[in-house]
Length: 165
Ligand SMILES: [Cu+2]
Image 1 (cartoon, helix red, strand yellow):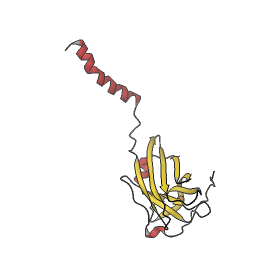
Image 2: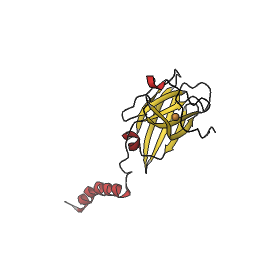
Image 3: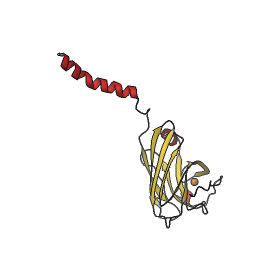
Image 4: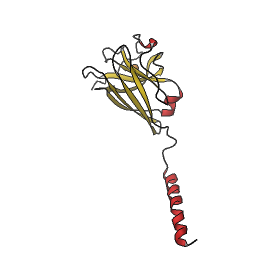
């Protein structure tokens, strides 16, 4: 093998080593997109996409349609499921404004996937007990929406921080 060929053969290997040395993010889970379905005949539905950023950070991007008017709406990650939701807020998310919300939460996506965690949206800060959309965080799309257990007007055990800006 000529020196030229040898070096040529070496280049991809060096590239691989450099990539490994620089460090790809450590075993981040693939992004997960789930469906958010309407609750209480809200007509509000859409998706939430969760992307692991590494270092126990997950980006949550929500896009739903069907809101009437521009009222900012509280939205959170809870424990439980849409059908049987623990009303305590696990991770608050940025209020939905015109159906959009983007938040980075301090937890790995793998941890959100390891146990049932629903994302639920509320009608408004004033009518937070009315749930308008929900989806269960799960690999492969999740499930959500109109389920018998969702129709109640459960109370949150902690008040909203009033972040309506
Ligand atoms: Cu909530």
